Length: 210
Picture 1 (cartoon, rainbow, N blue to C red):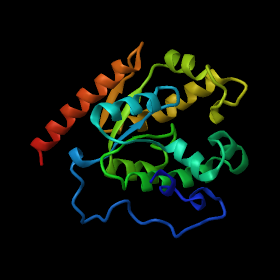
Picture 2: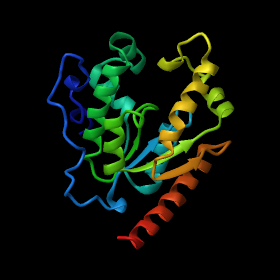
Picture 3: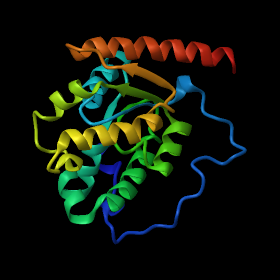
């Protein structure tokens, strides 16, 4: 199944399908939150993939990572794609991959750090998923991202200054997620527990307003 989710053409800068319309027809009933995929958003280093994989196991759902699916489809790393084609082409392909993944029933999806920032991808996620922002503090994020040199946006002379810039620009957009969870220090399972409880609370409250 996973091999057919993405098409390598989705990641090709030369492939330009017709521009998409609205993420959902304006007169279509919104998807109940209890039936939506859970999408984790947030800056690099907050643990979206690790938390997402463990959350999926806890919830009995399938797990997908949008960056992994992009690499599967393109045959190159995210950093390599950024280098060869630029961020704009990457975000365009990322949007199409996320849209394909969200067509799957009740999955947990870990997204790349910029996915929720791109306006079209933001709209798709907001309308088709239950979006959870994993919010990390500056020092925790920097400690984690410093463990490996694979973050294309941090390939700059001053990564700390770049991270502060990203936090200032992106955090107000991440804050539009349906649920916000502060990343717990220590084992990721602490964060998984927080996310699970917050999702249950959010769905219970949303059902009361249906």
